[in-house]
Length: 260
Length: 259
Image (cartoon, rainbow over all chains, first blue to last red; front, side, top):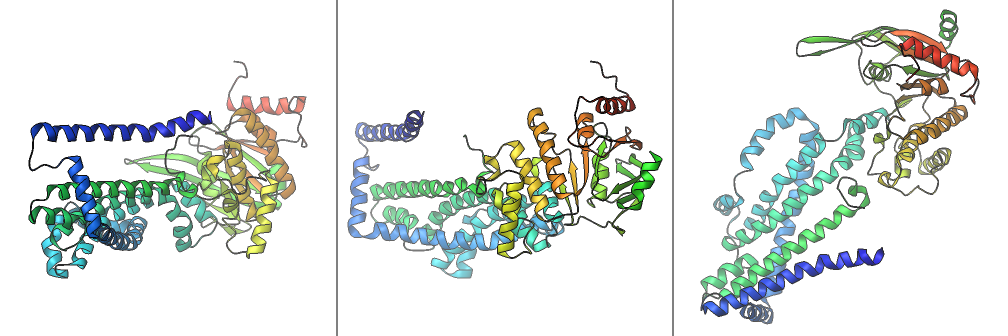
C-alpha cells in the first residue's frame, strides 16, 4: 500500500519534469533548425543566468521583487481582511460600498501606473502601491463572501452560548470563513506577483521586471530576457506551492476537498 | 391526559401559551402552528412527534428563542423568552460542531468565562461522560457521525444548561448507531437530569425515550394528543405495555402497522 502511494508521489514529480525536458529539447532544436540570431537557445539562457549570478545582480533583483510583493501583499492583507469581514458582517455597509468595489476592481492595476507615479513618485513606493491595490480586491471580496457564506447553524450555535458580537466574529465567523479567505489570499498573491513585474518595468530600476526591460533596451540581450522570464515563472510556482501548504493545516483543511 | 397536564403545571419549567406561527411568502400566508398550549416539567424528557414538515421544529425554535411566534408567549422559569440563552442549549444534527476546533476546543467553546483550570476539568469530565477519551486532539472530520453527535451533546452539557433542545439529533445516523445513541442519551439524562425537549418523527424513538410524547397533527400543527409513557427505564421494547403505547400512537397518527 505505502509503496504504491510512494510511487504515485514520485510520478507526480517525474511526469511534469519529463514534460519540461521534452519542451526544452523542442525549444533547443527549433532554435537550432531555424538558425535564429535573435531568439536564444536554452544553453544561451543558462549562460545568461550564470552571468547574472556572477555579476551579483540575480539574487539582488529576486530579493527586491520579493520584498515589494511581500510589503504590498501584507499591507493588502492587513487592510483587506478586516474590511472584508466588516462588509460581510454588516450587509447595509456592503450595499453602500459594494458597487464602488465592483467598479474599481475591473480597472487593471497597470492603468493605475500614471496615477501612482503622481502620488508616490517614480520608485519603490509606487510599485508597492500598485501591488497593494491589485491584491486588495480579491482579499476583500473573498473575506466578504466568506462571512456571508458562514452556515447559519454555526452563527446560531455561537449566539446560543451567549457570545458577544465581537467574540462571535473572532471565534466563529472568522474561523468559519478562513478557508474562503485563504483561497482569496492565494489568488491575490498570484496577482501581486504578476503586477510586480509590470510595475518594475516602469517605476523602478531593480527587480526581475526591470531586468526584462533593461536587458532588451541595453543591447537586445534576449538571453537575459528569457532568463528573467523563467525566474519569474519559477518563483511564482514556488510561491503557489508554498501557499498551498496552508490548506493542509487541520484547522483550515475542513474547508477544502482532499482525497483521503 | 387532563390530570397529567394539571399535575405537571404545578412545577412547569417551560410554559407555552397560545403559540401560533405563520409565514408570509409571495403574498400568501401559511399557518404552521395553531394555538399550541404546552407545559414541560422540571427534569422531564418530552418528545415532540409528528410527520416531517408539520412544524415541530418551528415550535422547538420558538421555545428555544430563535424564532418569534406570531402569537402567544413562552415562559421559562416564569420569565418570558426573548432570545437564545446559554442556560438552554439547542443541539443540531452533528453538523453543528465546529470543524475548525478539536474535540477539546468544541467542548470548551462555551466555557470562556471560566478560569483555565476550571475549564480543563470541565472539558475532561464531559469528554469522559460521552466516551470520547483519547480523541481530545482530534478534529471533527476525523470522527464518525455518532462521535460528532456525542461531541455536540458534550459541548451543550459542558455549560451546565437547565434545558436541552434536540432537533432530530440522530436523524442522520445509521439505525445501529441511532439505537446506541438513544441509550447514551438516556444514561446522560439520568446522570444530569436536564429538562429535555426532543423533536423526532420516529414513533419508536419517542416511545423509547420520553416521559411524555406530544403527538402533533399535520399542518397547521396542533397538539393532537399527549401520551404519557409510564414504563420505567430501562424499557423492554417487546413488553406488552410498550407495544400497546406504541400501537396507540401509530393509530393516533393514522398509520396501520402492517406493511
